[in-house]
Length: 260
Length: 260
Image (cartoon, rainbow over all chains, first blue to last red; front, side, top):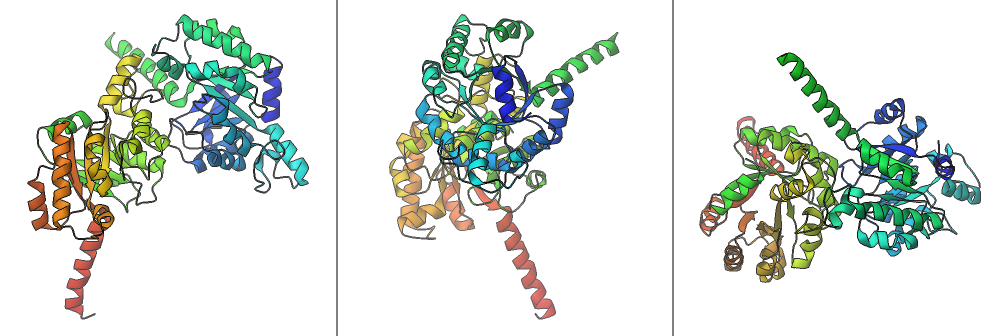
């Protein structure tokens, strides 16, 4: 699946499920994610120390495995975004976007003229290193590139329609934990105010034909409640969280058995 | 020693001693520093080409050795600082803080509410990956991160009181070499203006219950004179400096024996 197919499948009503990379440092994590049935990989540079080079290598491995890899930037630095796209990322996730002005510079560096001011860096992995006429290269690369804005504050919820209206934004993604923090209800992922925010953003983005993703919610009861609201993609947690959760459970079982 | 312990010891007037990494690229340097009896490890990203990922690997190794891990970021980019803390750093030594506004965005990105707006990135190595209720997680993470502002210019000395007053700043620390450069007395570490600056900043820190550190003084007589002023943290050894000094001394001894 490339970036264009990712966009198309969301439009067709699928909910694409992603795995976050927090612990791994090799591209093998893409093969593991695919084997587990994930649809895409979320390579996190915000809460993870991995270098831009490692992030790009994981993206290349994901592409070879047929999984789109979206990289979450550490902040909103446009040059980091364009280097990641040049290196093989399928898409860019910009954290903490409170309004359209904040993400506009990143979009400009992720889209070729006339849609933006991305610089041509030669053949790109996303196009199989094809040597295409410039106009075709630019159009096809743009079509395969995803830019996702994260909604993580009450201000962002307010501005969701304006952010979704930007032509260069493909989707919005909730950072539910930070949104709860900023709402003054840390960790209260079942709070009705959070559900109200989901509803209002899904509606605002939908009016502009943009899908919305869910991040930060991992329990079965809450996923059962929220996913049917119309989320078209979701992040199901990180490799670290899964190792910790699985590890704790297995140890508890073994200790119980050993004590019996 | 962990961060709360280091904070407590310094506030009780005990002098903690650090070792800085400028040359090494293996986390093994933490074990070496531990074997030599140092209290904390400083990973220097300002004057060494270490990236965020390697810096956090060194921090994890230092934490495991029972040393407090502190990273000096290359500048004032808040996203580098929060990623370092997410990856395991015990503290940040922020260079060239001339005014409160230089460090305010870093405090905002590195401290959870009520001090700042740090983003939630999941379980932390500093908290042994505990899955805590968010309010507890936030308070514990704030308690376990040490934020140090470096005083390296006359402007900074003049603003020391305002910097020390900031909620979330634990300590001010001198970069004495850069201070003499900024004062127009490069390398004159025994200049009365240096001692005057030390006294001014120490008084400001006492006023606000903050610790004070010093770096850059290697001469024994000067150290004896200055440490009496009330510093509670000192960093004078870098791996590069020690290798150079040791290698030169050995080369000179051999020159006397072999004649060249």
